[in-house]
Image (cartoon, rainbow, N blue to C red; front, side, top):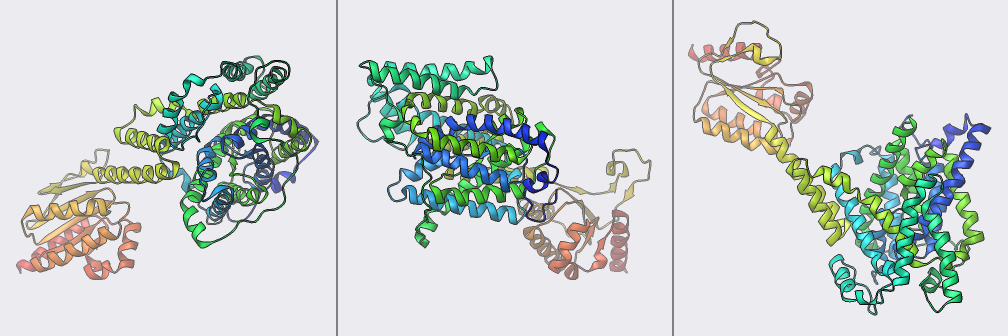
Length: 564
């Protein structure tokens, strides 16, 4: 599919749509809609907003992602990855819900720009240890936020925001555990874990919510026991779509929320494209990453206008869609319609859902999200990857995602540059060049003699700022003044501004010492950079040779001319 224009996948799929596809999409959409219901409620509450905001995000965001996205099976909605970020914004008295609205809309604009500028593939360059590190960190953070509701702890003061302080408060108040509430939460976890062994099509979270809600209703009505429910915490839940809201825009608020909005955009892009890629592997498709980002961006631009929270592609719901026969974006649109009907008809009943049951749902979500097996497997990788993994994980847990992603990317870039610098080799060839060293096949050619007064240096790898000084130091260490220095660059894939500056300094220094510089085997890519910079004019194009044979002949001519 072309990436050069706005082309939602829905449009191309509808050209060949038929009744058989609709029947499959209808069944998949119904099932995914039911699966998405408890997750949308749980993610909304865990994020510090109302359950209705979670469902509205799944309805509006899910519809737009399917209608405008670049994947035929992607299901959009709220996910656990955003819980930590949303909760941090909402709990900030200076930001609150208005700050969340603005940050989400800014993230939507960033995502649209990424798609329009054809940067859909750039997300793939984020190192895997960073993705695993902050995903595992988010999982631990989500689990931490659910301890109070899972065990029914009575905590008088407002819960602190940071990880360590939360656990300190939990330990200080663990004597207030409500064992009935704990039993509800643990039973919910057991039901969710065991349901797939009985039926893979029925979502365990929905079964747990229905069973536990009925049980708690009878407990609260006919006994003296009291288990906290959504209604107790949020009051009456209205089954109506809120009116359109417009954020209060100011330059100060935009500046303060810019880093957070960037994190939401990056996280949304990573999760949605990862989900779409996994889906491609299962159903044999190929999504349009740029169009997917545009669809995700429009979704995040629109959902806040109706009270929604950030949304992205959800791997679990997308896989549920595929496994139940969904093969076009129509299934995602039906999933949104099913959620809308449930929201308008059954939403008041959500008030009876016990909070400990939702905590159990999120404990399972955090476990699945933790990827602990992948985490342990990465521990066997090179130390640099392990360092990035641990730092990203710890920063996510102890501080926040914004810092974790920024520092993680910075460390990954530094380690990458260190690896690149170490992989680039510079060697000096004194007497002769063995043609057998030039290839992996024996060529049985005579050795190339290096004329007297000529030195040959070979650079093997990128010539960038990490290696330029290393080459200059080698030149200085030689402490000689040959008549000609040949620099072989056949294995230099690219050169940056520092490398060019280094070569210019070398030419000027060599000129003062009476030494000529000859370049050999310059690749077309490097040559065009040197020519554009004006270096070729400085050195002289006759001093840039296509291969070592020509370079040695040129060097011999220079030496002979100097002798004469």
